[in-house]
Length: 226
Image (cartoon, rainbow, N blue to C red; front, side, top):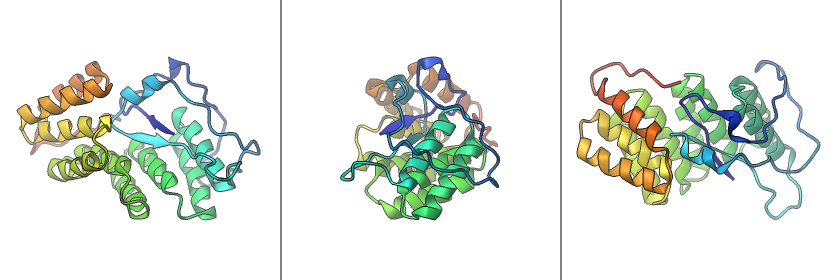
């Protein structure tokens, strides 16, 4: 299951059922929740709110989640509550239990990005891609971080790959529009803005972001939206 989490401050009053747990710093070792049920679904509105996505684990063939999968889902709850360091701690433990959990890398990457650690976020996106090369989401998320690093050409390449893999991934079009804007390719950006909005992306949020990026363009120091 996929959640889009706004990189502009997220309005958690949308009715999502999230756990706001008191979790310590990264140095503390969290424990997996005993209940094997998957994370409750936030409202679908969250999908239109963000240039990045996180995903929960599903039981799949087995009837219950593994300990690593449950830790990933517990991390999602912390992430949705804005507790990014706590989420990272949970993803860390999940990866110590199972180093092949691509969703843990994806989600940890976006948590790092939310904390302003863009390079660490990209490293985790690349690990997710290495584990699952045909998965569009980490390419789209990587494009988001590359825009914030003011590397629009690299962001464009990553967004293009995401769209080749999933032609309906709305935040891939939003991030490609952002990259085009920094490259002063405004006509191409406008097409992707239209496409992203058609797929359900927030019109007001994306247009506000495009306006912000036009004020910095290539050669200026980007100011992330975090």
